[in-house]
Image (tube, rainbow, N blue to C red; front, side, top):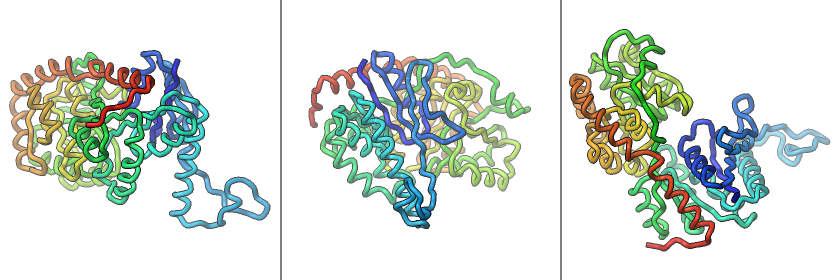
Length: 403
């Protein structure tokens, strides 16, 4: 079986997209190993998943030992007390070097880089081992929330290496057009962040776990609690909609600030936070809500061009949605008639559309039925053959045609 080496800059515990791609390739005769980051006490250095996918993890940081007289090892040639910045840079480079060496020694037929922070490492590993290179751009990282300091570096990396990849992938049509224009490459293959099709009967999981007593509908947000997702706006709107519960599932930098804001707004009884749950458990949580919400803000091109995991997860679970009116989101919501759209940044519009669904059970039921029907088309199984075809082309040595 041809070996595939996938690189991710995370622990590979809840990366749904990478897992689905690895499963698809493994099921089609490839031998997939995912190279990820290791955190002692949380992850295993090596493991084999149920479907045969292997995972190899490299420590995500270098333990610093100040140099002492006569000491050996990594710390010896370095200053005894380097600056914090220098330690971080050296530690990051050390981890990338460890990943590169392990991937190169793996002798894969294809090295598959997931996102720009693994692309240089994957390219070096591919060049040193004679492997093909596939680049999977999950985001537009030159215009991404929190990436302003790295924009020039990202542009330099992608400008240099993306045209050298044997195959490229991204997540939406808008992003594919952007990459093709920005780097003069053939339009990348679009693989949306769709879940696998699964039975999602309505459950009471959220109500039971949180002990919710009122028969109010549950408005659910699931995903990263990060800047630019419209979550502060969502809580302010929640304060004006007393007939509903609001539940946020996930974690991130905004977790504590959002909890404090909830308390300040007097929402402790109606707004609840559930930490990140496993991929296996997430569908049952989603299916126990009544409305899915995606109030993402127009802070960058990456947001404007997204459709996101959560939107498709709401669809698979049969939830009506209230979401920001961005092009890719509009394609799904309007075409399939599964929810209501709101202009970016409008508290008034978000409140109005949420109130419509909260107050109208029959409308919720109609849109939920549409979502169930849409799930038959918007699932991973109906697009995974494209990934297999891409790999066949890459391994056959066929080049992409430039636009």
